[in-house]
Amino acid sequence: MKITPHIFLVLLLAFSFAGANDYLHIADSCYAARALRANGDKADAKNARIMKENYRKAMEDSTVLEQATEGYVKTLYFCFRFVQFDEKKRQLHLDTLMDASKSAYEKFPKNKEIAHVYASTLSMWGSERNVFSSLKEGIAGKVRDVATAAEDWQILGRAHFVLPYVPLILSWPDEKLADKYLTMALEKNRKDIYNYYFLADLRYDQSRYDDAVELIVQGLDAGVRPGYILEDKRARWHLKELWKKIDYKHRDKLSPKHLEDGENIRKAIEALRKANQKKK
Image (cartoon, rainbow, N blue to C red; front, side, top):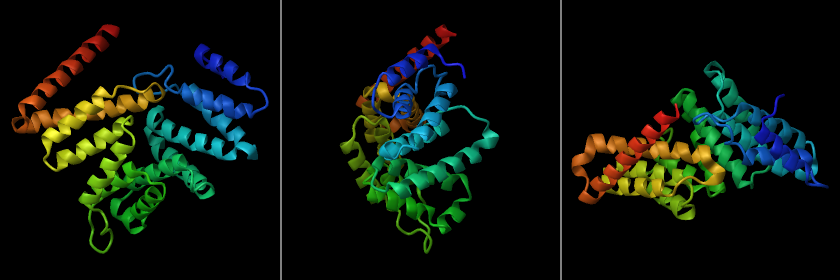
């Protein structure tokens, strides 16, 4: 395997830690550098392979099993979202992520990072299949139960918002609870840009367009966290797409302040587009 200079430096730093699980240090270091050499919103596949290989090796050491397992499922989740793969193998990749996150959750049910990946994967896995079959199999209920146990308000709120109310099959989704939990998620973590997006999307559904734009502005102002470059860039893209929808369909319902905010967003999008064109 050919290793890029950036990743090689990371590996050298990882090996400098004495008396610890070297595989875990290598994998953690590569995970921290997962946005290096990204092409657009697609991560470097070589770095991803190094992460997965070393987390698997680290899992053979019982003294770091939980940390290595957490890193492994987070890596699989990251790879599914950000590493390019043949779309014909999408279901295979998702099934692998599903099996790994389920197994990890069964071993470490109190690990909130693992629970988050498992609940997120359950949601994706269920939506990729026949929706009503997934509902009948109780996938939605599992998402709710895992998120509730882990106090993962983001996923719990999103579940209450996007899942359909189906009498006798799925009667628990409640928009009031979606509002409650998504608000709690934002209050708990204002650095996660998806918390702004999910609550703004709910406000849009509630026809509260000014409130949605206010959340979009706050989310964009939060910037991009150094350790979550690809994740936050994608969340920012979602925020901008939601603003475009509001601006196109409901511009006449916005207050003067949020019309001005919208113009600032438009200018920022145009400036970024021109900057990207110059790079080509």
